[in-house]
Image (tube, rainbow, N blue to C red; front, side, top):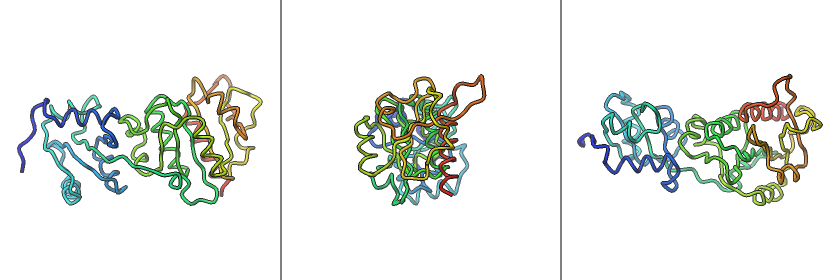
Length: 262
């Protein structure tokens, strides 16, 4: 067995820290036993593992060794240094980032449901949107350029592994988003609660091929996307509440679409 890495200046530390903030190319950081297991179960290539001797997971260690993953035994000081959490869970992985084509986001569905996160800047919220999209059966998710990166560490944790399975493409501009909808004959439905005259979400047909656009709680959906919408919807709220967290609102809308689709 190789010697334990005890120096916080070891080259492994910047590699993992760069992956956390999206500076390691097509590699993302997954921390914790659950996320590492999710990566393996999703068929993602786990490139490197930093693990503490206190993590007693013989079955997981065997899976990692069988997959050809490079396993580094690290001291807790090293794991704390490379971790993005206040206290390291004792295991962190560099995972090959999924790559998806247009066809993957449609999944061969006769009525695909593609979510667009437009201007969602909080990575934790974005991760929860990804999780809600997978849970409700959306076919894929796109993000508008300028929003949070769904493959950064906080968003990966917020998705609880969904980012490893749901087809997601990051950083498209408005023209590319609308071109995607046009090319694949998706009806653009924008959820924006600022206009009280918009129809309620239960009255709009979400069973057709749909691109559902959601925005950040504070700023909403950019004007260019609102103007291009085929339909605009709102979720009726009990006063004095004026808005919902974007992940909560996305879940409400997606499960209404699922209800309509039977």
